[in-house]
Image (cartoon, rainbow, N blue to C red; front, top):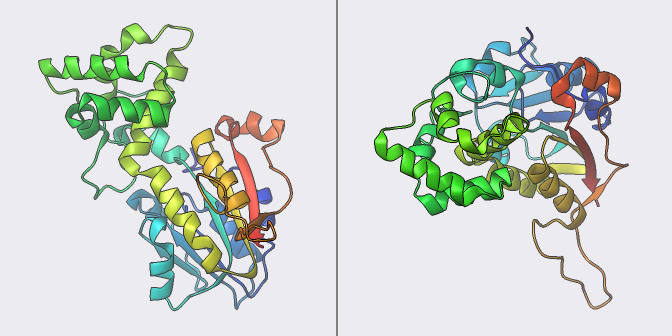
Length: 298
């Protein structure tokens, strides 16, 4: 089984419009599929920096003098690029979400398929785990997580049920959590509801939306004049943030207009939304919800 099957591989790299001598960043290295495709299009003078905070991904590092793998969260993209003397780049790729490996490694606790410790940490050094959220968050905070990040309408009753259940002992594993919530999991919808619950907890554990916002806010100052941003997202919460930032340079509200009615958005979109073909989805089911958006400086 491969570590991770890269989604929209050709489309997302084509979007970067790679210059052989350019400097590029893959902020979600994972199995290295996108990075290897970028390197195949770079000349000898080109450079590729990649980010991944997950130690498992570092086993896939690429032995190439043009390549540098940085073992940190991509929210710190500007800081670490400057450490390497890089202030501007020609393109940035982000393949958001969880890698196939993280879903398939039972002990990581990302998947609803396995009975594993409630972990879900992409950064194994982090103190905040799924187990801590389930057992330590108060009822209101837990309900907020389930509602905001899982878009679950019954978030309050789910949170109440979890809080009551943990009075009888710590909820340690994914199957224990599933058992606690069993009455809210009708057979026809069990997988969908569990996926929403796990998504909500995972986003909170890894601060995924905050990380995405911090990352996007740095892009306008990081890109060269004709540089490109290529972002693949997998659920509506991510995609809305990416779409909105490309359109307005903001995550909420509308940009202010000057006296002539003009606004000053930093980015502009390139082309239309790109989604996987039926053939790709057939070969890799995890591609089914992927959306690719491309932007450059305005």
